[in-house]
Image (tube, rainbow, N blue to C red; front, side, top):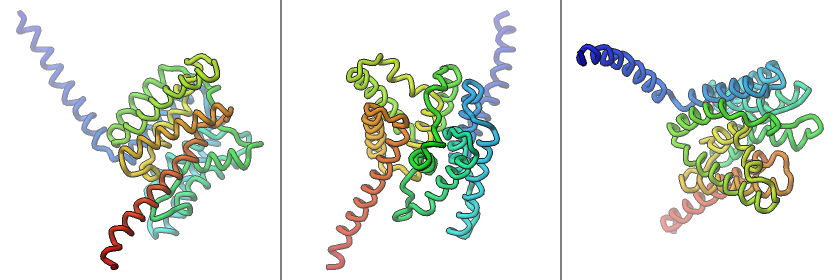
Length: 291
């Protein structure tokens, strides 16, 4: 009788396990450039479903289409070939989610600035700023009367964010960038405690922003961008810590867009320092040969 009960269980396992393994193999065999657009679309869906974060679908679509169009044009002009559009899609949808404006033009201009920065603001073959971080910060600085950014007022509803965290952690782990996210999150929590001690605000109030939709884009996409992070693992962790530190200082000075500005300042500075260090090392190595 025990054997009769075991047969269906084994059969179910034999059909379920291969199905799961097929999906697992498919997921982990995807190139990272395809996973990022899939994941950011999930963040958009979760944020819109939970908080209604978008100004309108038309504005977000304008930001995406502008980013894709500018990427195609500049890729063809600068490199003589049609570029892959995954990065442009991520930049466009980030602008579409994070920019808040009653007008349409900031969405198009924000995406245009983001993509153009990749081609123009370069040194030694590297672009210095995360594209969407650059475009959004420039818009916030130059068009403050018209443009704002998605903030913590959209709430911190945990169930959809838990799904985002799990999916994002799997993708970032596969991309070998999880250490950056982990360092930043731990640093943020540490500095939230420091801010709570300095300001007298409750610790939970200081740490709560990290559970909002804006921070999911910031943590999983902006600070982990392979094209605009330093190359060593320890350096990436140091930069993530410094971004969190700069953010704390900006928050203590009541900067509304502290995380965006912190990355805008720290990220390029770290890239420039690394580029200078590599050039100095190359010069040192080649000097004896020249002599």
